[in-house]
Image 1 (cartoon, rainbow, N blue to C red):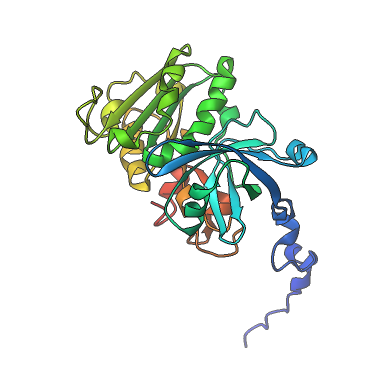
Image 2 (image 1 turned 135 degrees about the vertical axis):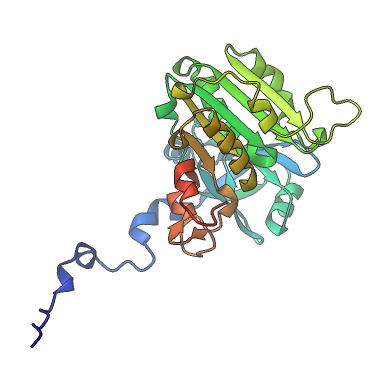
Length: 302
């Protein structure tokens, strides 16, 4: 005769002791607030991308708002909707941020038609960030493809603002054509900074292009890397991660010291719409920044 299984009182489990919170309001209350913001300036970067310089209007809200490189915000355009956008500026200026926005839909189209002085809403910041603290005293390799320079610009500016905290910095950037290069007005400034090395490559050169031609992995072969002291950040199309990170692994850089951003999967930013999930992982909450080892263990992440 089998021994009956004793009943177990699940009410003693830790999660059962917490108050019901079906919408996770207690965890997400800090990002429910919409900050009223004003567009201060608009810079045309390419035919499809513009850089929006934005200021939170209320001085008290400016003081409260802060972010870290790699995080993103939800941008609300009244009457059109809300979209997630990675922050492209340095965290050093409180209440101010810069957003590089590509014109691809209704909301981004409305933003591209906006003028200086237009009012928008900002929620956030959301997500994880690049571990810049861990990189201090080490070499930093920053690799971007296409629009990936937008989220990568925040750690670039963080390194520049705190140059003494980091050793040698290499920035590699590739696009399909020269016309698609972002932030080209800043390249010479970055090159002039001590121990910052910038290389740019394109797939399809035009008549004026005099730089390297090919894939971004072609630039890695020309670098001198100390794998024991190098951290890498890679931003761009997910297919690029495999080629760049595989090449870095071959050079001895540990996958735990390579960081990628899955910002292209972002939607609501709060884990409610389930459009960003990979298996049981909500990339908008547990990401968008992951080390490459974790990404390799997330099926269909890239």
